[in-house]
Each structure stands twice: as structure tokens, then as C-alpha cells.
Length: 257
Image 1: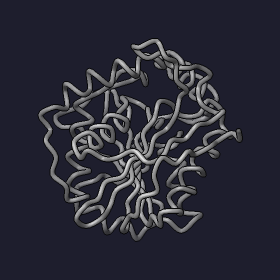
Image 2 (image 1 turned 30 degrees about the vertical axis):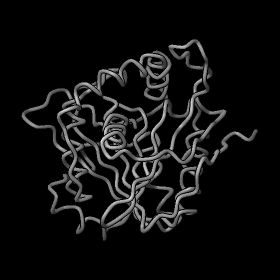
Image 3 (image 1 turned 135 degrees about the vertical axis):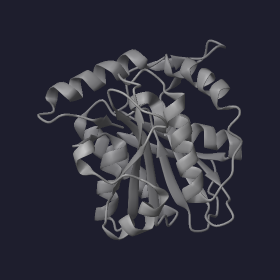
């Protein structure tokens, strides 16, 4: 097996799909937001990604069967655009692995003619006043005009560097000519292992406005609790990965997603 391998369970026909990435990160904002949308929209899984760059462990399920860590791809047929969601257990544990993972995601995106990507994550802050703000980063100036009307804050001084899939993915998408935006919700869910449902709710409200989709938000708290049980399996490894990345970075790391 190569370092990254995508196993297709189905090959759906999709119309103008937008790809939404939500892997574990600070506050697990992206993972919770994307996972909740998958649940509420009853999106269907069509592919799984396995990688040598994931954490070196298997996850024990309740029935005693162990499984490999993986990223999963789901699709949903929308009114304006179809959607592709990518969620998963882990990010990479090596720097080059982030490039492999992002390029594998982009290979799939190109296969389905994706023209726009939205990545989701949390922005670690000391304190939050009121509803968490959504800070954005785009990979071309033309996208500022499209997304500013939604009230997204575009200010590079608030973030500094974006380490991880959510940041790297929009950079590599630019190289391939794919429009992309990274959305970051303010969260006190720091370190990475503290899940922040309030930030996830703010993210979901923004994301559903952008996509012009309505979903039931009443089950969010319950689903966050269920997701936390899954996250516990890998949280210590995520914490160590985060600490290592911070130690290696010469700049202040405001966001890792």
C-alpha cells in the first residue's frame, strides 16, 4: 500500500460540488461542524482514505473489533450545489504527510470537478465575548468580495500562520486553480482535545448561510457528546502532535487545523 490510498465504495455523479473539509483541530470545530452536517443531511459515504501518515494506532470498537484510522468522504445532493464532506480520525503526524494528505484530497476533488473548497477549524483565543466570531482566509483576492458580505473577518494579524490541513489545503488548491476559503471560529477549546460546541454552532450558522441550507440545530449538543467518545481514542496523540508543532514553529501559532 502507498502512503495514501483512497478506497472507493461508490462513484456518485455530482453537479458542481463544493468540498467541505472538517478534520480534528483546535476545539474540534471543523470535525464537529462537518460531522453534524453529514448527520443532519443524511449524506452518504462513498470513499475512505488510509495513510501511513496517520497516528500509529488502531481504534477498538465496542464489539472488540479494531479498525484503522481513516478519513471518510460523503456526498449530498443539494439544490444549488452538491456537497462533498471529508472528515476523519486524525491529521498527519509528519510534515510531509500533510502534503500527501492534502494532495490526496485534491486529487479526489479534481476527479469530481470541484471548483470550490471550504475548510473548517477553530481559532484559539484567550477569551470570547458573545457569539464566537468567524475569521477567514482565502486563496485569491476575488473571493474577498464574495465572502465579506457574510460578516466573515479577514485580518491576517489575528491568525499569523495556519498549520495543518485546513490551511495547507487552500494553499495547494490555489496551485491547482481551485478557489478555497478557510473558516475559523473563535474558540477557547485549547488545547486541541477540548471540544467546543459553541464555536461549532457559530460555524454551522455561518456555513449554512453560505451554502443556503437549513438544518435542525437541536441535536448538536447530543451529537457532540457522542463524538467526544470517539475523539477520546486519539486525543493524547493529538495533544502530543500539537505540542510538537508549536515547539517547532518559530512564529506564534494561533490556529492549527
